[in-house]
Image 1 (tube, chains in turn green, blue):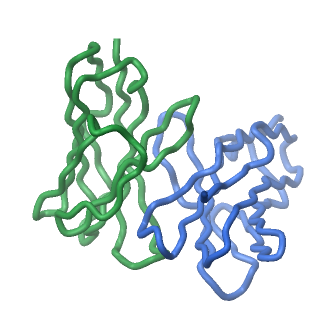
Image 2: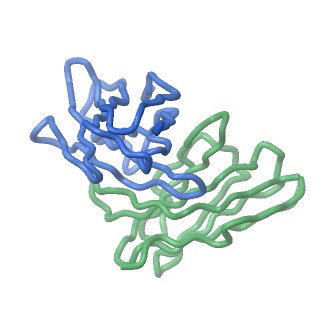
Length: 113
Length: 114
């Protein structure tokens, strides 16, 4: 099976702009989670979607949002970008049961100038 | 609050030597435990996971980990490392009440020296 794919892989934006990142899960996986990775804060959970519904949300401001489509593909959006939003954004997909492995994509590296 | 502590931020070790990367978690409820590896400019790859049953878990690339409930630990071990094991290793936990949210430790950079 093809793995989790994320587009774009690299992105440069300026403060105040907004950005949309895309994630295509492994075929058959209906749960998609997003994580932010920074040198200072490490890996932090953003949110999880299952069957087009947000099931869980981490401690991030409302500028961070997401959605999931009927084909399980997911997007996350960050509005009014700040310098501190520069990070690697990782998407992971899994089967719905507790304890199921989350399979990660290669990430989108966002640089905010 | 849920937390995971990786006690060593950097671990240098010579090739073919054994290594242990330490991980402790806080929890009063059932947990599932994971070790992931991240190579430069890549996503995370699962090494192994503990859900229940035998406390000794074997994973890919010769790694294994032992779940110790009394000490709330899940240390990762490999008896003989290779240069190609150089990477960052993350311990993660998910709790039965947190859906699929993974809480990660801060990571341990393993550097294997020739």
